[in-house]
Image (cartoon, rainbow over all chains, first blue to last red):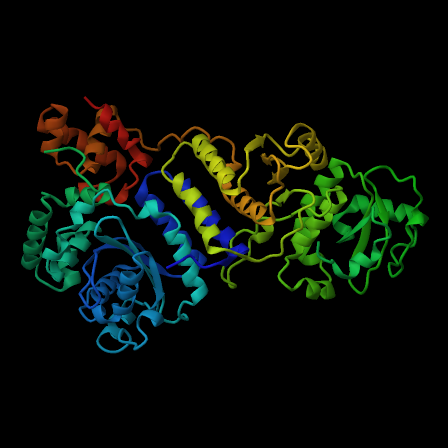
Length: 259
Length: 366
């Protein structure tokens, strides 16, 4: 998707925002957070999530891992992960994934563009998204040189209007303008993701956010024993031995010291 | 140059231009006027310039008035204005733009040209730099329900004589991509000085400038003096000279090019980048703040390794000390930092530098 032409005042705002992101110390994670927090403020969004997924074909279930997010409460975040990992979303994402296939470059779409048939508003998905307090969505897919995609979602609460095309264009330009933020040092770590079941991936997701096993069990509404099983599988899968190691692994993208 | 509407009718001669201002904001001008023209408070009159005499000091005001129904006055400013008047008035003007614009003029200006821009254009006329290019930072575009902070942003002008002022218009998608690409190139540079240098070099390449200069402060010579200087010593009459002034105390950026003047597009790109990237004009960053928590060297090393995801055994191995010693450091560090587990440490301090210094110090460990 080519960059749209924008009014000078909008370009100024985006350049200022990205200029400020450049000045953020502390590495890629902090720069992403600054970018997303400022961008959501700018276009009047309420929450965002930045995840990574394996490259997908239209109609295939997307497999992703949310790495960073903000603007959610514990309840809405849990509801959000239920919603985006729901198998029904595959159909709702067919159009954006096809667009990505066609252009091979960054694609940004609004919820109403991706899903003209309003699949994600109908049961059972509609309720899941409402529980997450999400109505307006801008989704931006950014392919990286490996076989991975960055998936950035920007969300607006239920009682607010949907995003419009101007807001979409701003998000597209701000996210696509700095490709180095989309590069991972740790692509190999995502390669094995599809081997985990959806429940295991949700567990991984929550572990990466620093949730305790007890809270993971509560969120997924499963027993502590089942949770422990999932956690063990995830640890074995990623070859880590503790939650701390897991968090560090995703944050740095590689083991700092060889074992 | 666009027509500034009714105000331009007041131009008596090519040498004069007009600006509309609130008298209360410009006491010195108003004082001068009231001394010269006792009845000026009754402002529905237009005075011929000759009434004021030709003995006004350089930089003072000649006067024409037409107040309409608003408390506004139009002044004509005599040419050869001094830098004091320029800076005192130019930098104040931006603060009055929204209150000082009469309703009918606002309608005339409603076609996308912000009033502050019109003001600055007029100021530029005053400095003899006719038909330059003026632009100003606007601050954040925000939702209508949020407070508009654009009035707080500093005035900015970028100018090159003899280039028509660009209308507010769309910036091409490719140009946006090119601008952001310049920022992308410096994203990983943490040193402010090298980041600025790389960005300015990139800008020169993008707009085809031969060189750039950063002058310490706009408080020095006036724009026209600066301009004359570069005209003489720099690229000469046929070249391009763009001067960007961010605010009174900030630095001045000058872009130079031999042979061809800059085009409006090039000036626009330069002005967007130079005026919106805020760290370009900040002084070299002050010393890093002293961390609130003072950890001992060993505690720091242990925390750095904990943040790297190692467990206590791994740390003991790495540092070549006993596991109990590591536990001791971990306990005392957790106490100082107010955390209770490694997971808590990782989630609380994802920016390692904020607590225990740069993680790159790891490489210097034994």
